[in-house]
Image (cartoon, rainbow, N blue to C red):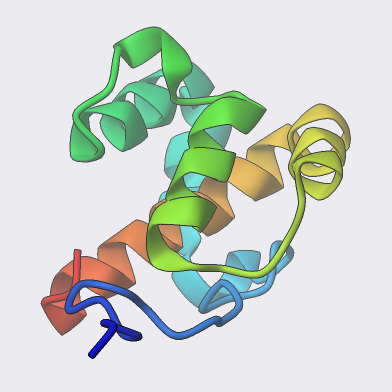
Length: 104
């Protein structure tokens, strides 16, 4: 019998917050506005990646693939190019929520 569901597979979903939900977690937004490279390193550290990767589209796409979050490379590129601070905050909020839910 073929295996159809992987034990670690996640159901398709969206990010847990909108990219523009800055008021949802003001601390994360302030952190990003005061030191964007610092929050990028925090994200990269959370994902066991190089600190230089935390702000780009690549880490966002890796995260989306890992947790089966809907989107595309084009959307990742546009989000990180046009709304970098908001995209980084969204990713950090999602990581923090998954940690608190025990699924990170």
